[in-house]
Length: 475
Image (cartoon, rainbow, N blue to C red; front, side, top):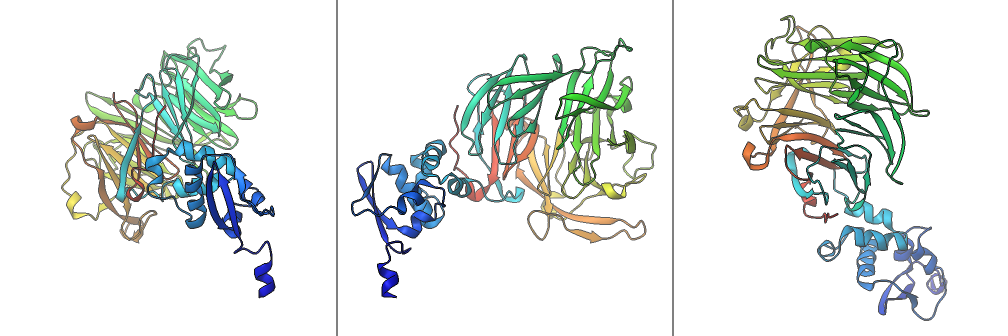
């Protein structure tokens, strides 16, 4: 035992550091916990009788040292320093992964989510659209620019495109964006890490003069392909499959004339990883209410494997209550729709689709059963096995009754052989429409939910409530 104590590389050996003129004393094990490739681990292996000098900010080093000791940030640290300041120093010492895990939000549960900040780009701050990354980062399109925020939601840079406005954006690779505009034709590819424009894809047909100035309406991404919905001035529309390796059109998934509601362009596209199917939906609203379709294609043979139109043939138990929006839970292959008149939520198992596959949700929260719906614009988004609904300016979440996140299915309606799902509906944010504005878009990324509102500057950031007020965002 005595030999172990005298060993100069024993984990309990004390090491003294002089950071920017301020002295620190810690243990070998604490410094080595930074990781074998970190600067601190390398310094800990140096035998030194005098304190090792590091010419950096001592106050921020104190925060990072506390992080290594306890695996969490001191509560006062984020009041004194921005995430960006901490991230720059963490990168120098090689502990950026530890900082990231300690500062990112806890798992997102809509039932206890809270708004923690609003990200406002410096110019043209009313966003036209946005894209959230798997790591919680954010790209905001405003005017013809894309403002980029990293996983800490610190502003990185802005990329100016050749477009006057951007209305569709999709991440086709971590740093590559596919963008489209309702005022300009074509799909355009930008490398946001360098700001370079890399190419465009247009829908053209030399044998059909109606196919010209085709604008992008929706984009979906898969590992090998990009699926793009195009619409022409004469209402001809299509869904093209674009090879990501060549940025060339590999096939035409569908082509139709949009003279009727059931043939209008898909405003939403989703690629389903489990089956490789592409789900498209279109919704129109006129004097007689909502109408639209849901269509599922198999890109391998370009066939429609299932579709439904609303108003339909009357077989549905909710005939006349057409959907106002559609969402797809890609984790469990479940299709959701929100009804335009009643505001009711319905689901269909994509693996068991038929003539009338819809099961309407049983609301197990007594306080929500009498909740009224004003019939205004509705937006639905599925994320992490939860369904978020923007309705009348407020935000609702449908989540599992017994455990937060994931679904709980109960066998029911045995006569029809269906599984009924018992969900609990709660308000994430209950506001009057005039207080904050109608919700325009909802999207999840990392452990965050992002929300934009009509004619309102910035993007709202929602996180589980125990991590509220940790973000400092500016551009």
